Amino acid sequence: MHQVQAHMLKRERQAFIMKQVNLHNRALSADLGAMLNVSEDTIRRDLNELAEAGELIKVHGGALSKSYHYDYVPSSTYAFSEKTIIAQKAASLIENGMFVMIGGGTTVRELVRALPQNLHATFFTVSLTTALQLCDHPNVEVIFLGGKLVKNSQISVGGEVISRMNDISADLCILGTNSIDGEGITDSDLEAVQVKKAMIKACKRTAIVTISEKLGSTQRLRVCELNDIDFLITELSPDSPRFSNYTQSGMIIL
Amino acid sequence: MHQVQAHMLKRERQAFIMKQVNLHNRALSADLGAMLNVSEDTIRRDLNELAEAGELIKVHGGALSKSYHYDYVPSSTYAFSEKTIIAQKAASLIENGMFVMIGGGTTVRELVRALPQNLHATFFTVSLTTALQLCDHPNVEVIFLGGKLVKNSQISVGGEVISRMNDISADLCILGTNSIDGEGITDSDLEAVQVKKAMIKACKRTAIVTISEKLGSTQRLRVCELNDIDFLITELSPDSPRFSNYTQSGMIIL
DNA sequence: TATAAACCTGCAAAAAGATGCAATTATAAC
DNA sequence: GTTATAATTGCATCTTTTTGCAGGTTTATA
Image 1 (cartoon, chains in turn green, yellow, orange, brown):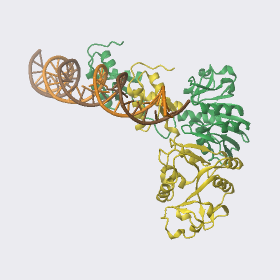
Image 2 (cartoon, rainbow over the protein chains, first blue to last red; image 1 turned 135 degrees about the vertical axis):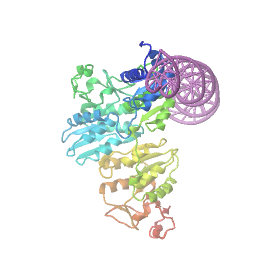
Image 3 (cartoon, rainbow over the protein chains, first blue to last red; image 1 turned 180 degrees about the vertical axis):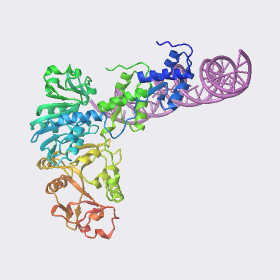
Image 4 (cartoon, chains in turn orange, brown, green, cyan; image 1 turned 90 degrees about the vertical axis):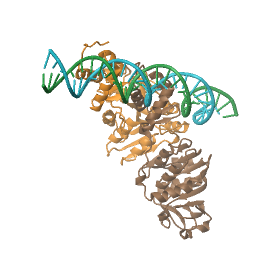
């Protein structure tokens, strides 16, 4: 580990601490004490002073960088700006007269918000929140596919829904997802998976909208393979290297 | 699965948990414990703290993202205190194990809010907002009867819905209304009327919830006669003279 | 209704923190 | 250079926080 000169002024030491904290976003009192060859009491006093001066955030065991904000702002959706970009791209896929099957989730919420007011289209959905939001669009027709509701995700599931979908042939399926990797899409709720499968089957084309953070994550149940997907939409530029695992299946990355 | 650095500050751990929850909308205590290399007890304590701080919703087995839940805004409700009284009375009609068909509107919203958390019942509805609200009750089953959505009332209508209702026989139908007079209930939207008729037909008993202000008003389309109604619930005392026109049909006034 | 998982409570050990004090060191005045 | 003063530091002691575990209870679900 680091080794530091013997006699150090308090000011220098605190500068060193700040450097460590800003570099790694965090620092443990014990580590700093060892690096600087001073007692943890001294480190603690330094950290308290720096916290007092607003330079860092003191926590039990050490300190965190000020930029390390976990002060989550409620009412605003997670990764809002990314989802806005995604929404713009996805909205471009939807044209007047289309029949669109659409899922739920916060990314889809932003997408619905981004839809132009003069859009003339028919939407099918199983998500209560998506349906509610679509009701704000004057020129779209909204069909809710009813059934038993899952409380957490606020979507309808069950054989009822799925058999209804078999009667539908829509132009585009838009799904958010919790996990996508080189194999395809996965999820953790069996009933939701069954519904998503039916949605994909009922549509000519499928678009997946997700923030890039979810690329590479996997859950227990499989929704579909990569080559069931026609469009993958994230906030990244389509030529990002992060898509190297996803291109061979022939999907279009937006 | 994920692997995380050895010594993690509590705050960092909680930030990680928030990220997981926001990313996947839900997280299991067991998974988090494994990912973070700490006991599930620690995870539970973290989840409780984060729930206390209002950052997520703690459930049995893990936690859910907050971005999904119905935020109730009482300020927008007209005649709030009257509707609260009505809600209390109407809630007393609903017992464990019942099948209830329920409509929409702000009076019904207060009713749903007044339902006890431990109520064990099955609800059928065509109202998106009522359905969403019912989703916050842990012990009820919610069935949404899907169809074409009417945008301003946010209910589903159409032959689809009505034919589905013919297959149902519920114990109680709870409807709000805009107009009730000595003849019965009337409304102005044909499609909504058809659905309400079907709802009443599908239930053994019908309860009407409305503020007294609406007593005596009439609209163009008839929903039902007075003797189709079993309970009339307003904020007034049952012996109020305002009910003189309504008693002869044999309905019970609460 | 049985059963396993999840939960809660209290407890104990370990880690971190606070505080008072003495020793040391820096700073400035002389 | 010396000395007085103030700041800094480490240590001993006590308090608080964090964490895992044992146990008994509750909850979900087949």
